[in-house]
Image 1: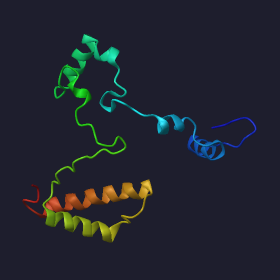
Image 2: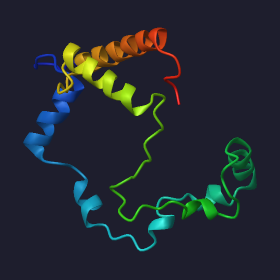
Image 3: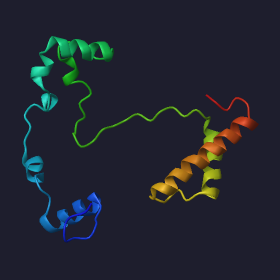
Image 4: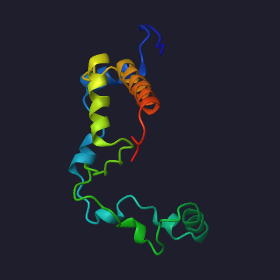
Length: 140
């Protein structure tokens, strides 16, 4: 981004250095806020009471329950934590170990660099396709 009299900077750079210079802005409201009814926090009741919007919601989300039951469902005990179940792996455990070992010898699995992470995914796909071509019954 270009600001008159200043060098070009990325939005990320501007945000980071603004936080360093000015401190976090607006965070005190999030940290000090006590929420009485966490299950209903942030619910737009005007929209929830609108039959047209609710009809659209239920038509496009068949797993949703009516009568506002969706507001309190699956509420985590702590709002900064969301527990997700791991998906089932398409490979049997011994072949997952083979894939992991093959990846360890070919790519840096410890890197946080997104370019390296992309290479990890591409290499994992190549190994998986190779395994599919040479083995039967590897899928669950």
